[in-house]
Length: 322
Image (cartoon, rainbow, N blue to C red; front, side):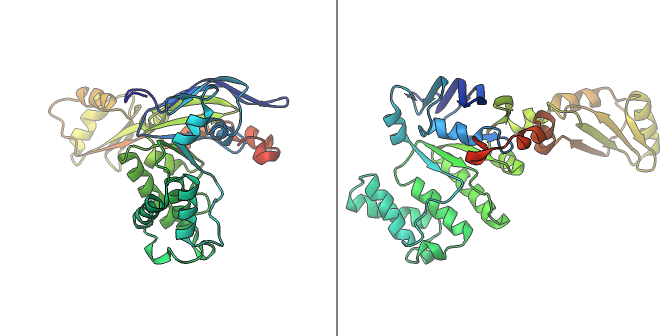
């Protein structure tokens, strides 16, 4: 795989369970060393996508390449290049943190010396020194999740799948996970993240895909997605009533607030739209305050998905395919 090749390439991916089509021809590319977030309600197909990309579930149709290897032709090569941290911790609660990492090193055939060095490195990196020799069953939720991700990194994966990694964590632990994910991509690891926390995708992801009823409803950066839905506007504020009145005349479609001396203009929130608004003003006018308001990812999610219909159709195997 060359540096320009995507870490993950998916084309026309289809998966059915019985009469239900869980993934209906989805496709996307994930650049190396980036975070790609897949958003969707329960039942949308997020976990099924991860299961297929990580070789756990065969697709019914479509082309998949992970770390430069074709899913159908070289699944074993994919397995050696990836790691998966699922929604539920894979930590052995009877073993200590160190023993859990030693176990993963043995499974990766690292050799005793290299395995011990890798364990020490990961314990330090994930701030587990004070708990390394305690049984993992005594760890807090955040500590257990840090250990879980550390175990996923023992084999130096090129691609790390994080399936709703912060579910159930407190805000501080979630913030710690966000920091860890950022550090991983700086080290060159590609992170494929599924989450129901829209602020998490907004904070972490270089690109986001919204999955709804087995289809990609939209894909892009957070900023691009926010421009897809209405609600963006620019608010111009003034100290001089005269300036305010002149702008009201220049922007007849704006929403004026005479008490606050503000004029609100609907836009897509882009720099180009801001420049267009300012260029339309009389050069003699002084704008004292400018605020750009854009829709949130919550607005995007609700505009692009039919969460009620998805939730109403949830069935077993965690809605057959979450």
